[in-house]
Amino acid sequence: MAQFYEIVLDQGATSEQELNLFNEDDTPVDLFGYTARMQVRSSPSSSKVVDELTTENGRIKIVGGTITLYWPAKTTSEIPAGGYRYDIEIESADGNVERILEGAFIVRREVTR
Image (tube, rainbow, N blue to C red; front, side):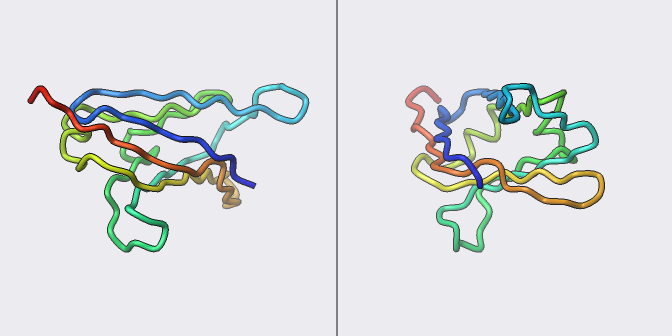
């Protein structure tokens, strides 16, 4: 079952977030060979994707049990301030997909532009 986590970004700023995944015995999860994808939408049922991060587009990096999410300033400046929803799925080399995280995605309006 996916864990809930709120992501808050500042509009117009570069941001990186590290997520560390652990097994039940507190050892890091081995994500060797995994890919990951994340989509942000105004609601889970919305057809419009506000932002998309993947290992393929270079905005998600996986090393060991750590997943790093990256937002360049240009991207965050183009996302309208407000509240959204997101989830993150990982896929193993043999095609097993697991949704690991979901939650609120908040972009705080920038003043200095």
